[in-house]
Image 1 (tube, rainbow, N blue to C red):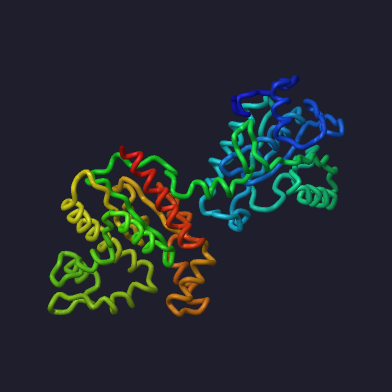
Image 2 (image 1 turned 45 degrees about the horizontal axis):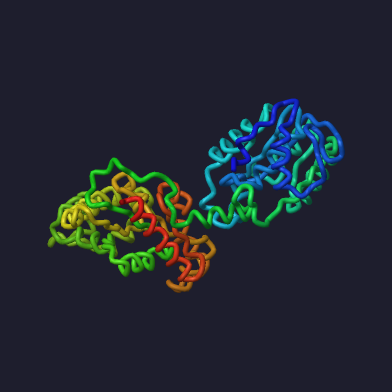
Length: 401
């Protein structure tokens, strides 16, 4: 069975087969090309949404807009603060990619132009473009359409025809999907390969970075991997070794921070921590010394491993250190910020302000995920996280065969 986007709607006449198949996806009255259900002919039709991992629900809305518009589809794609309350929002695709997916689909089904705008408020171009004629909504977003008309009335603009579509949530035997939900798609993506592995690394054996922010659940995932028989190198322990008295790293620290190294060439790590904790420039200066030293120590450990094995390298600052370019894969463990703050407060006996400062001192989950091949979320029960790890490992072994 061919997919929905394999059909194209010409600018003047519709494909009967396309309309027949669209009826399987819609709960609405009979409708025809360039006419709304009320029989009006329209020129410019708008709609909005996140459009993450474009699915059948999105395609139905976009297709209806294409079918009733004779000139242009105006589409607002949400971004910024508009997306952060969504489930697994950290995994939402970059707005440029989402806009490109919408544009490609619209080009597939119609000849009318598609005007795309990233939006950071609930209304976007629907209340700034006076020449719009209609807005396409679902049952879920119908009130949003009414709110748009209220805003337009306040601005002296014409009322939009609200074209409402009832989307079917049951099994879709035509397109082989069961839920019209981007959040479901994001959950399904957990544990899967989000982008191709790095084939340019010089590392042997097959090396995977395991990272995550404070209280992300990274240590628990490392335990799961060890229980499955994998070697997991702990970079905290490896880093401790690089601070050995008289080591190359200590000699470099003595030059950069002379007050923290004694005559025995030992580092007073507490004094060093006090210096760099509230000074970003000095912290970056220290990191530029420590991270390469730790990476060299990791390489030494890897050289002891069988070349055909898989080794995980657990490191909290792996992405900040720029290590993904040297690894075959990077796996990130994360949880929602609210959960992260709760865990930090509980674990470290901190108040809300202290926990916020600790979490805010790190890069964001979104930044880590942008550099990652696999994402694992620990928001839910421990067993749910463990199942994601099992899934990730199963897929890892399949792609290595």
